[in-house]
Image (cartoon, rainbow, N blue to C red):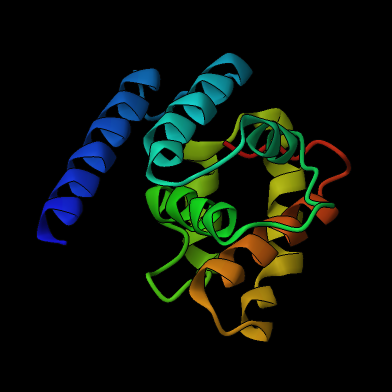
Length: 153
C-alpha cells in the first residue's frame, strides 16, 4: 500500500509539473490546445490505475454519463478530481477551491460555463455515501449543467 501511495504521489507531482509548464506565465490564461493536452495528461496519470474501457473514457471526455458506471470508472473520476485538488479522499467536493482553480484549469471560453456548473453542483456529493460515487455524480452534474461543452480527462 505504501508503494502505491508513493507511486501515486510521484505521478501526481509529474502531472502537476507538466501542467505548470503548459502555462509559462501565471497571468496568461490556458488556451484550448493546452486544455486538451492537460486532459490527456491527467487521463494518462489516472487511467492505468483502473480497469477501464477506452470507449467509456471517450464517452466521459464528451460529457456522456448516460451509461451505468463501473466502480473503477467512478474511482477514475475521483483520481482526476484529486489531481485537480477539488475533492478530498472522502469524495467531498470543495466548490470554493474549484472556483479558485478554474482560471488555471480551463480556457477563457469555458470559464463562465464552468463557474455555473460548479455553483449548480456544489452539494451534489452530499446525496451519496461512497467516495468514488460522490465524485462521479458531481462530475455527471457538471456535464448536465454545461451547455453541451463539458469535457473530462
